[in-house]
Length: 188
Picture (cartoon, rainbow, N blue to C red):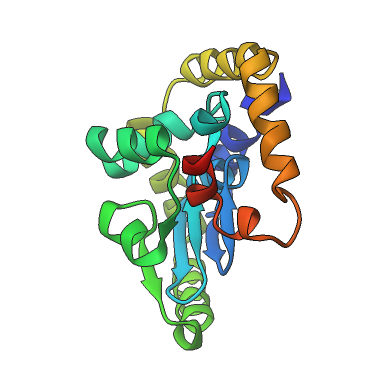
């Protein structure tokens, strides 16, 4: 049950949340990323992906709603159904991240943005965030439905066998499967 609530809590938190991605964010990591108010990524190292469908399950913590909202219907279909890795440049182009920046500029840019927002009157920032979220966030019930789909499919034999095959190939280890997970899914 907690699977569907955490990203929503992050989106609705009082502080403005800014994600800075310097590595990989797939599956639940991607869902955490999308739940932040803003997202910035390293051009050299950031990778985003939603591999759930390729493993036989369903993104259960808001990825469907967030990706549709951020990138649009067609891009959401491709990101979720294909399970391919998306680099920072492509993530910026389709709207999954606000900006993709070189490593030597990324932290300074995000820090300056956070300081600028932090210098504005708190009540105005808080109200603006609340009203933007009211217009853009998915209904809690939609995310709960997706969480239920995830739980049903996670118990299915086809998903457990696909995950076992990925584990044999080095999933969750420093391996080609882990580093190029989108490509590894296509090879199953």
